[in-house]
Length: 174
Image (cartoon, rainbow, N blue to C red):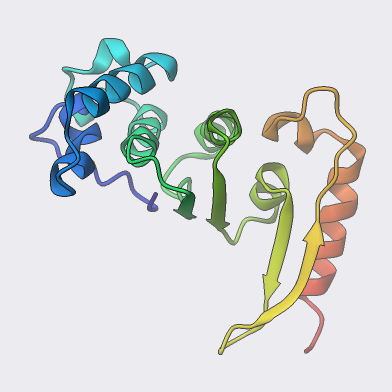
């Protein structure tokens, strides 16, 4: 998933979702059905025939994630996928997508410069050095929450501790 959803305006949401299947020659009755199921599961079934411009930014990002999930990848790469969204939408979509990734049982690598986003979505934060980048430190994130969601993490007492630890590490001379 990229910073922008990269949905094609001339294609319906459904046709955008199956684009990767078409390109990889994986479009079958089973994968078409899976696309419909994912759209239904994540609240976009009624928008299958809509154009991207008819959807909110958050809905467009969900469609982009579904386009990725329908390919059944082992690993998802999320390259600042919420940066084009306003703050409130960013929080909601981050929560939605974080929960979708967990529900689908997928591993994801999230590239972000937003500490709060990293802490709320990840199970570990990898801090890189300057160029050429190397791993400086890996910080596991453990929250004691009955319902561990990205939004709930932002209110957990551990959140501030992790934020300060990562901030300090980022601002320490190498």
